[in-house]
Image 1 (cartoon, rainbow, N blue to C red):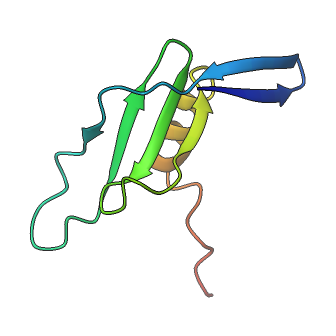
Image 2 (cartoon, rainbow, N blue to C red):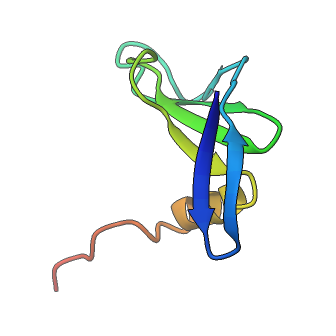
Length: 82
């Protein structure tokens, strides 16, 4: 399957034929609350490991490192009350 992505540089298609999904090593019983990732020729898929048949988020491989950086620096955390 191909997914069309529009960005500032124009349109391009992302290959969403993800074959091998990898679960994080942080996903441990009993909750197993984690995500899985898969890579294709030009895209990265992210899905809920407990609901693998539901929709996946799809990122351009060029965007993926920036997303990981924002997550690891906790840039998405809500502001703390003063």
